[in-house]
Image (cartoon, rainbow, N blue to C red; front, top):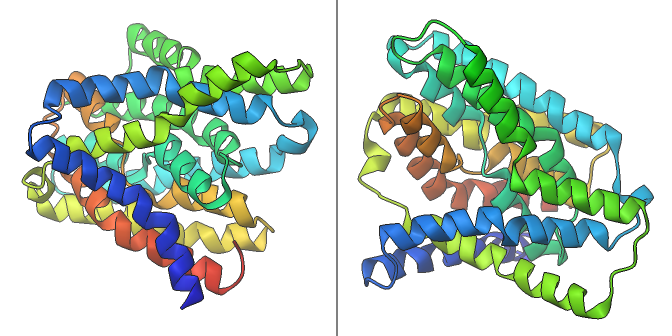
Length: 314
């Protein structure tokens, strides 16, 4: 019972914030335009500030873990390969690009930070997990959506340039690099800027989660149900089943293991739908997987946390 309560305490507040966003949308306090602007604002300002603060105020030598970063990178690469192989077994080639992206691309930044902060009181290893996975998420998303775009036969120079620019200018990655440099150079953090930075960073999680909830559309969750259900199963269950035992065997514990869990088993990011639509895809499969994984991850993540807690790994 104690392990179940721990798991529920970790997941329920996160999903209640999303439900609040959904309720506020239903009663008219949040509309689509406002939810979209909230999402953009969180991505551009509070989330990068939050990861900067967590990294800038700790000892760099104690935070940096090349083994953990490499594990996240390699597992992400293998996950993308698995998603691609399974997509080849689907009859409809027009949805291959969307399927691959939806099956591997997690809400690693927002949900990773939200869960670890909720359990441990700070972002913990989430920033290092983001370094290992998010640039690869973004780069491979552009590649698969470009290569498998209806009527498209490959990548061109403009797409490659746009991909690299998107990675270099990613606000979260800029916040991580800035925080690591600040920590490595041992620059002191004066009290007033520290309080301002902390106040800005504190709005990231609640605002981001409410924005996610406000954009939830249950009708879209059941469009293209068969491929959507397969992609959702891979995202929430399949990858965790394959790679969590490997992570445990390699000795990852506590916040590192929770960061790996979120990387593998959190809901598909909303930006996968936005990117698919903007790159010439229909978008129905992407939105379906986002909605299904968002809806069911409340149960699967609680279950995974319960298992890890039961075996005293977190």
